[in-house]
Image (cartoon, rainbow, N blue to C red; front, side, top):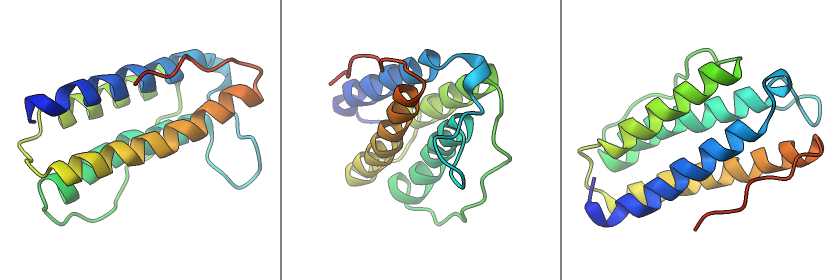
Amino acid sequence: MKNALLPTLENARKYTLEVAEAMPAEQYHFKPANGIWSFAELLHHIGYGIFWWEENFMRQQEGEWAPPAATTTKKATIAYLKQAFDHLENSPGENEQGFHATIDHITHHRGQATIYLRCQGIEPPTYIY
């Protein structure tokens, strides 16, 4: 990972984990509508997406989309996110455009997660940039 990208990664990690922490554990199953992911599934998708985007876009190694079963608890989901962000930080990939595409994917779904919080009457953490 290029040192110039580390502040962007650290902001994404910190804010994503703050969003994950803001939802009470008993609400990790919450879905704002039928037919969409639960909060836990959404955050798990962010985590898996980090692994997949890093492989496919930063290292430019074609990997199939094969996510493992989603985490279901707050503790497991946050641990998975931390593992994914650590993996990204330690990536040997040098494709800067791939890094930004990965961050964009995180941002897209994290924005959705803030809506899940608001649906539960929870003020999302203050955005970090």
